[in-house]
Figure (cartoon, rainbow, N blue to C red):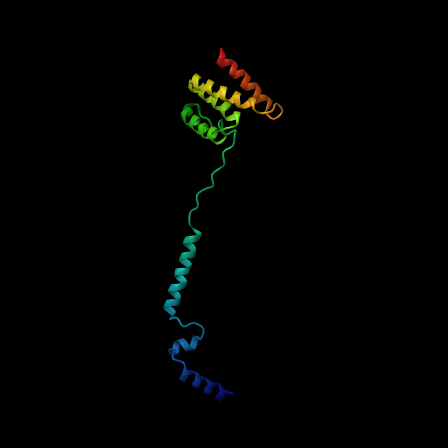
Length: 148
C-alpha cells in the first residue's frame, strides 16, 4: 500500500504544475502571504462596516409637542418648534391652541389671537363628540380674551 501511495504521488507530481508548497496544502492555490492579507482585509472591512455610525432615529412629531420642553428664557425657539408642529398638523386645532400660549408668553398678542381664531375655525369642523371637551373650553375662553 505504501508503494501504491508513492506511485500516485509521483504521477500527481508529474502532472501537477503547481509549486511543491501549493501541492502540499492541496486546497488553496494562493501563497500564504496573499491568504493572510486577504483575510486581514476582510476582517478590517467587517469591522469598518460593523462600526459605521448610524444616525439616531428621530422621534416623530405629535400634536401635543408644542409645549414639550418649554423654557421661558428661550420662548422664540419654543415658538419655532411649535411652528413645525402646526405645519405638520394643519387641520388640528390643538397645536394652534398651544402656540397661542407661547405667543402670549412672548408678548405677541396679535399672533396669539390669530392662532386662536384659526383653531376655533378648525374646531367648528370637528363633531362635538370627537373634540376634547377641555380643548373646546380653552378655545372659547381664549377667543373671548381676544375679543376683549
